Image (tube, rainbow, N blue to C red; front, side):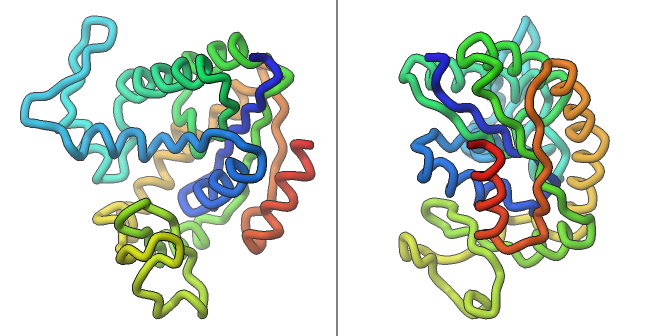
Length: 231
């Protein structure tokens, strides 16, 4: 199992983690692990009063959904429960993983990283920090669209500006309700700076390899840089 590759993509909202994660999963035959989608799939179909119990505490899915829609990170214990459950299932399938924006908090990192090291080996874990300015983050997110069916992210360019349907599955292009308006994006940036960015120091303590990539390049150039540093 310890020959399988683990890639962790970090970066602020709009850094291209999702796009690069999909490209890497296809190029390297890795499972694309998108924590936000894992959470979304769980909380958006929640029934009234539904909860997940972690270490004797109940986390009500309606409350987690409210946090998610406001751009505030969901409860770390709840997120970690979902993430660890999925990682263990993938390990049994002997699948390598590319993580898009996970772990998100120190708590989650301290829970998830030892599990990854145990299952996959420290030498097989690569961390990519995609750098992007706050101004670019707000602009990219406020222009971002995804497709209704498969949730493919569609980059805003002159060529896609007037596109109405996803070129991959034909479904309607939509904006993520609430998450991508400027005020929510500012909240998400604050959350990233205060709660996710400190993870880099923790990764260094765990002697994990961290590489920085300029995220303000084209998608192709960012992808080429990532491939270069993980090979």
